[in-house]
Length: 163
Image (cartoon, rainbow, N blue to C red):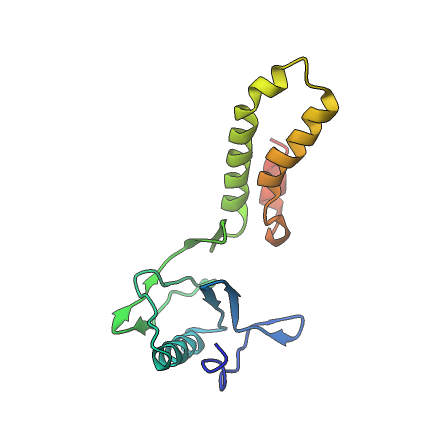
């Protein structure tokens, strides 16, 4: 990544600091302010990878834009055009071009399923309320709140909570 990003100057910034990528283990998310910048970033990463005997898997590599303008530029890796998507699962969270609502709905469904599986515990009179609350917090709420720090709450999501 150091070689790939040596001459790359990103236009995406958070708190005034330029951000070009997010990395976790062998997953890399490239961030760019426009398609030309993204194409350049992918090309530089592809070149640097091949210099080290590695290859980007074009079938697993996706492009997602956060723009109202339709994508025009074809971005390729190893001669293959990269697929454009509107939704991707990254580190267990759903990221979409429509914001956090799909992720929140997914978390509600997952935590409801976990809660339902624990029905024998909820109905067991030999288990104290305080133990049940601890189980609820650790086994259900942890599922619901996973990655909630990155959610964007808007009026639509907040109003659906009251329905």
